[in-house]
Length: 514
Image (tube, rainbow, N blue to C red; front, side, top):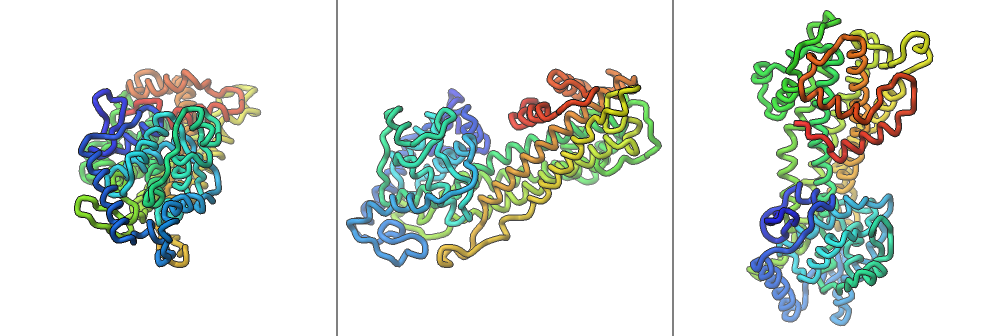
């Protein structure tokens, strides 16, 4: 929850939102721990755990081994070393590293979970995570190595290691030894208490942090796809009656109705002269609200699943200090995030497929109602050697195909691991990583589609087929914003730099669309 100065997110009080996590991940918000009630709750859990250890001497993951090794008793003189060994033997992550935004989202989500007060961790540990966030120090976390139960053990071991001064961090754009950065900033490594290694690592915070980022990117893509659809409809001399309010009243999915409403708003202008006798546009235009609407209608329940996971205690065992109970369970299982991410990546890939079909129409002279081949801007004797957006359309097809390929649900590929103790796992982190890849590919398609639609509108204007009266204020603003940074293609030129610039704008959510 953001406090009065609107620059800080408070932990340990009210529920956090996806937006809180993304603000922290983007570095626009600092963090701090909350109230006296929060402090007291943390203290009660730690006190109960310490008393239980002294009186009974048997606590899973504290005086026993982990997972299948839970029957192995740990000698009293080695109990303090056990969490250190847990962090170290899980230091086997591979693949690319999470970027800084993603790693900061992990810090925020783990802090939120531990701040629920059911993990038996100390204020020193919580404050160390706060220090990392506020000093913009992020653990170097390899992406690969988690099956999503017992949580994100291997990637979260990289967070645990940094708290104690080990492994590496990303600081000021460089990967450096944690010990060196801590010494430079006078940050003292903490020593993990007996339960704290398990509490840090045994949870769903990597997949949940990535899910928060994925959600916000998908939410924006729904708006971008709607805006591009409106541009394509004008450029194709399409039928705006496909988005009629009365039409959508009889199929009342609220998200679908919202997309149709946005399209009506964008198309509130004089209808251009038609160069087509088609009463009905092809599906990629006519059914755009139905395709984008699936994503829009999914967002509320996806938010519920992600934010419930975000605001949960999801390690094991749960330490109930108030009622003095140790509760053994499976809250580290990331099934809800896995389902959310598998669902979201499918909805997003359908956006890529929709735009791909729109672009195929827009560039094909057989279907585009009189636009030039491949949207080339060349004329006269120069026209035969110029190819406009031909290769861009091939690229759109390639990116779309890869996005569709990555929609295979990861959550059904459970693998029995760890001597069959973890015999049913969620694959939630793989689902989240897949979703981010699908988002990246779809954002590439979206960037190319935005430039292509812009080119089509410029060509229509040049040929006096469209004028200012045919554009709503919102569409004219969008067109002006794009043309401020994009030179329409007359003579062929490489478009990679243009595409990358507009991918960046889309990912940074540069435009307020609706």
